[in-house]
Length: 285
Image (tube, rainbow, N blue to C red; front, side):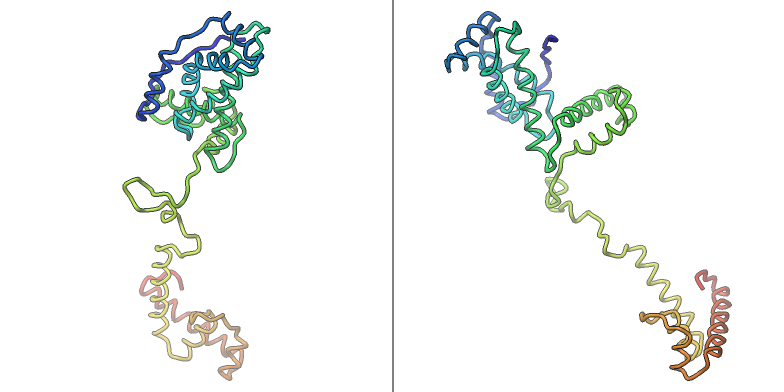
């Protein structure tokens, strides 16, 4: 089994309780491998004091593990709590006869407990633990590349660094985003909610509405140059009045003229409008 490396990174100690906790566990004494064996045997016999001692002596390692999963949706304090739960499980199940140090065994329980919390509690959509782990790797790699490149890295650059297919990166990165409520505000100092910035698919776009109104005004202006009979024929045939367009037969019956005569009047009226449109540089008639 590979050796365990404890990272020394800067921790945000903004919460007083977390600061006090980190200070307290820094004073706890570490135990040696032979002591772990003795404690493990006592734990199997039901000795709660031995369990407490084995757990307390490894609390600092839990903090080191929890730091690696920061900025994924849970505060550091919650990550440490979840890691401690995994540490306790490991202490109860540790088999000292295998010849390994306790922490080499416990690290897998600690990580599993933290990733389980991230997959269950952070997102509205539950993610499998392997995807949670990959999103953490993507975030960590992206931050490192951003420092080196002095810009936000591309998806392809992250893929090359992690040696994984681009499709996998895209999927993990998309699902790794934190789900937020549409009722939440855009900023802490603003009352504007996220839903108010979304596009309304059922409403007409402002520029489209302006263009439509302008077109209606120009069509009415052009139609006003015709006599009332020709205006009625074009309005009924094309449905400019807002009603359904009518056929030449229907218009002929209403106006008591032949269908052919209505067709001739329509074509003549359109030609006059085209001439007017050419004079005024209209392009839609």
